[in-house]
Image 1 (tube, rainbow, N blue to C red):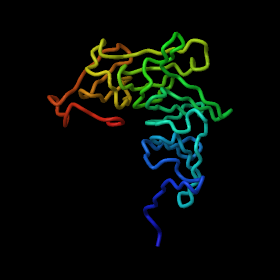
Image 2 (tube, rainbow, N blue to C red):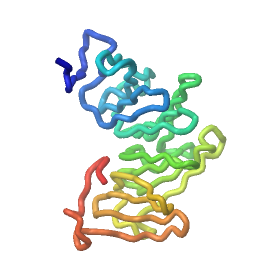
Image 3 (cartoon, rainbow, N blue to C red):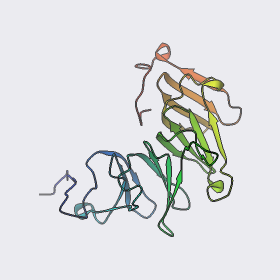
Image 4 (cartoon, rainbow, N blue to C red):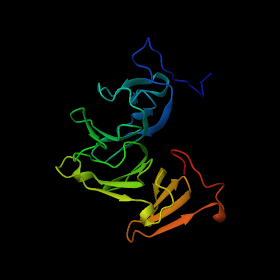
Length: 212
C-alpha cells in the first residue's frame, strides 16, 4: 500500500531532519527543492524524492536559530527571508552568503522595522509587510549597492493599520494587503488606497500573519 501522508519532524539525533517542528511557510524553488521557514530554526532546504526527503539547514552562526516567518525566491535564485527580530535576510546560493537588511539605532539602518510578517516577489521589487511600519518595497537591484532603495506605504497614505500580515498582487498592478483592520488595495500606479472591512462582507477586521 502507498502511504498518502508522510510526517517529517525534528530529530535531534539526525542532522538531515527538520531543524524545528514549528513550520511557518513552505515554498517550491526553481530547482525543484523546497524552502521551509521555521520559527526558531531558521530555514531548511528539502531535497530528494518525496518518500526520502533530506533536510539541510541554511547555516550561519548569526541566523541559525532565527524566527523565520516567510520566504520567497527571486529570479536570481536568492532567498529572501522574513524574520521576527532580525529584519530581512537575503541568502545568495552562488556564494552561500547572507545579507541582513534591518533596523538599527544609527545612520546605518536599512529598514524601519525588524519584524517582517510577509513577502511578495514582483519583477522589480520585493514587497514586505511589517509589524509596525506598514508595507515596504525594496528595489532588488539596489540590494548590493551603497544606497538601498526602500519605499514605505503606511497609515499616512490611508492604510488603516501599519501591521501588515499578508501581501498579494493582482493582474491590474494592485497590491492587496491584509492587516489588523481588514483589507486594503493599493494601486502601484497612483498610490490610491481602497479599504475593505466587515461592512463589505469580510468575516472580521483582524487578520493574522500570512492570512489573506
